[in-house]
Image (tube, rainbow over all chains, first blue to last red; front, side, top):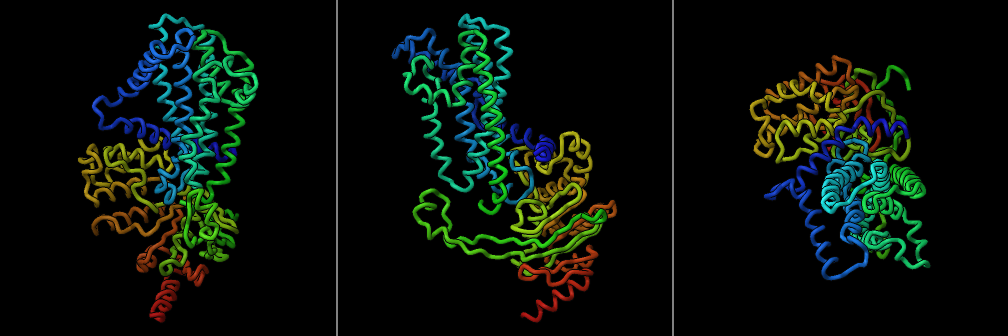
Length: 259
Length: 247
C-alpha cells in the first residue's frame, strides 16, 4: 500500500499534466473559452432563480441560493462518477502500451472536476456576497475540510466505477440514471426535514447527505456544521477511498487484456 | 534476488483468454453465456531467464511467439498467471513512442506531457529539456503545434524524450526504425552510451543483425518456450537455421 502511494506520488507530474490538458482542452474552440467555467454556473443560477421565484415557489427563503450551494458540490460528485467511469476506456491506448500506476487516470479525472468546482465556488462566493449573506469565519474554515472529504469520497467511487466499466461497459450508461436517482436521495433540492420520517434512514446511510448538509450549513445558513455531520462524512470518505483503491487494485491487473 | 542481477524471471506462465465471440455488455454477458466461452491459449510456458546489471539481452522469435508479451510482463502492463518477475531499479520502456501526444499542443508542451507519463517530475524534465531538444534536432520547431510536424519529426521528438528517461532498466520493442539512417545511427550511439553507463537493456526486434551487434546474450522464444538461451550470435544462428528449415 505504502509502495503504491509512493509510486503515485512519483507520477504527480503526470496527474498535473493530464488535469491541465483536460482543463485547457475542455472549452477549446469556443469563442469565450475558459470564461465558460464561470459562465456555466452563473447561467444555471439565473435559470434556477427565475424558475423558483416566478414559476414554482418553494417556500424556502432565497431558494435559488439554498439549491445552488448544494448543487455545485453535487454536480462535482455526480460528474466524477458518471463521467469518470469511462476514464480508463478513454485512455486505452495508453493503458495497453505503457506502464504507469493506473490510479493516475481516475485521480486526475476527479481532480480536474474538483478544480472546476473550486472555480465555480468563486461564483458562489460572489453571489452570496451580492445577496447580502454574511459567512461565519469559523465555518468557512471548515469548508476546505468538507471539500477534501468530498474529493476523497469521489475518488473512492470513481476508482471502482472506472475499473468495473472496463469489464462491463454498460455501467457507464447505468450510472447516468443511477446518479440522477441518487440526487433525489440526497437533500440537494430539499432539506432533510421535508423528507418523510419513514424513508429518512435512506438519507442517513447515504454518505453524500452529510457532505451536502455541511456545505449548506456553512454557506446558506452561515453556521458551523455539526461535528457529527463532519465526522460521519470524513469516516465514510476514508472508508470509501480504501475500499475503492482495494477493488481497483484487484481489477487493474487484467486491464490491458480486457481493453 | 541475486545482487548482480537486474531482472530475474522465474517459471513465468502467461495465458490469454481467446474469446470466441467477445461480449462486453451486460446483456451479452448474462444472456449469451456461450458467447463468453473462451479458450485459454498459453503464450508463455514456464519461462525463466535472468539479466545481469549492465547487460544487453535480445529477444528473438517469429511472429506471435510471445516475445512482445514477455516485454509487456516486464513493464508490468500485464501480470503473469504464475511465476515471478523481479526487477531491480527504475524501469523505462520504449514500447510506444509519443504516448499522450496532443496534436494541438506545441512540441515543448508535449515533451512535458510525454515525459510525465514516463514518471518524470517537472524538475527532472526541466533538467533534461536542453538535451532532449538538441537530440531531436527540432529546436526551431519546438513552439509549433505537433500536428504541423512530419511523421519523421514526430518520431524524432518522441524518441528523444524516451531515450532521456534515465532508467536502470530499459525495455525496447521494435522501435529503432526511426527517422533516416543518420538519426538511426545516432539512436544506436545514444543507446550504447546509456549501456556503458550501466543501464540494463532488453531489446525485441526482428532484425537479427541488430541483436548480434548490440546484445551480448539473447533468448530465442519458440511457441512460448525458451528454445535457446546464450550468446547472441549462437542464438541468432540457431533461430535462423530453424526458420530456414521451415521454409
